[in-house]
Length: 142
Image (cartoon, rainbow, N blue to C red):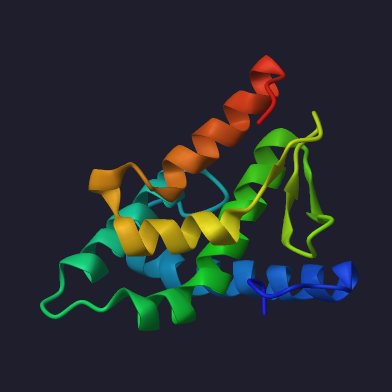
């Protein structure tokens, strides 16, 4: 749902809230860390993605389908929390986060890239989060 065109922002926000709650429930206990909307949790999720990628016979597409909405929602919620951005549907109908400086970032697309390409490519959710926060800090544009 989160990766397709979205027309109703309130419906999307309800789904995002549900996904974030599920991520906190599922991975919070398993992580052994203070799991929440923070960088440490994003790094833990990067490690989880890499464990999936390292599995024998790994095929990224089923993992992309099952985890993009969950982890993408969590990544976006972390960006919103740290930047005071807001969930937004852009002119193409894509759901993402509009940063206070107007830059639109898509945590769902980044999650797909992280699953498909992994750490060695630099496509991690924690780096994406850091870049988004950095764009706000320096007032940068895309």
